Length: 514
Image 1: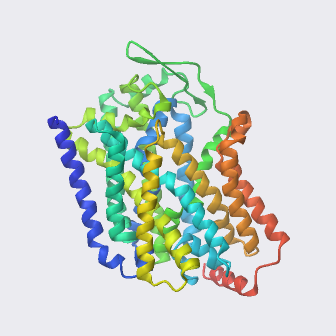
Image 2 (image 1 turned 60 degrees about the vertical axis):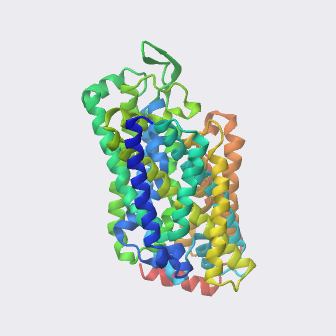
């Protein structure tokens, strides 16, 4: 192995060792009971809540998927997505966090399906079961996308077999999630959020310097038709001449496309990995500080990720010629390894590992809790002990990891597209229901079930069928699915009997505390 690769490996192994130690340290506290394992006993501080929420949310998509998109088509697609996500982050912390923290404590809820079930005082656990199934359906590909980022990282750095590296990454994530639960993942996510943002900023700064300064970057990027505009999208031809990629005429970015792309921000209202941080913070009064920290982190990180793609196109115009192969998502790795000493490049590339780990551990743990806590203990064995439930969760962790590996080893997968679909799924399935559950007293049990099914079903219908019609139908499926779910919740709730007096009194008591 070349000396440079040895230094890359040393840096990454050292990082992985630190994460494993965190899992071991928190193992005893995590195994105290299911609330400690799945929600950390509601002991998270404001900084850990903020950083872990955003790190678990962004995943390898932030360092690979978003820069790859910007590298391929320019500022518009990646830029409007980033703007939507930044706005969505702020609004979610502002509108949802305090009310959800308060409501989850009042109902003694420690998972999202558990919250929905207790919010509507259901006896047959239908809503809980549907929510649990939706988590498995959408989190498995999400976890797979994180393992893909790890596989691409090791494959690009060391020339290792991609599939083998996916399996190694999966085993690593499984090990420390198995040991430490929510506390371990939240604490390591705090560290990983710092690594991610430092890596992004460092690569941006060095990239700009290598390109001859900010003015040189802008000047060269402007030569590409539509590349630096928020209202046009660049059109690579897949060909190059004299080391420079060739582009066709830019395509216009319509108002509908802008709204559709910004709709990524709607997804936050239904993201379990973020919502659980609201529920797990030690005091709702600390959520204001968390909101400010999280918003600043997201704005800086998203801006840096988009700009990395732009700088990468200027410096290495013809490095990646086919978007469908997913190779464009290696632009961050290329910049890091070209501009940094090997040991430091390894630490920076550990940022990709950090991003992937911080998300995959959350996805796996939430999926496991959906089955063990909500289905096993909630439906199958209602008298199951905490110890039994946690063992079931670990078995489920292993099974879900195998499914995630299967997703990650598919050929020519693009991280951005997988995250795109899973994000829409959660946003439309849980987002509208979460907002109506917290803020509309008239929401009924039937309306909740109908809205959840409608949102999830529309994501599949729009993605696989309606969007194929093209034109105005080619918008991001989250937008129509989110709106459809809202409409269904309102209509069905108004057509069915009002919630019971007990449910309404509970809702009023939560609102009065605001």
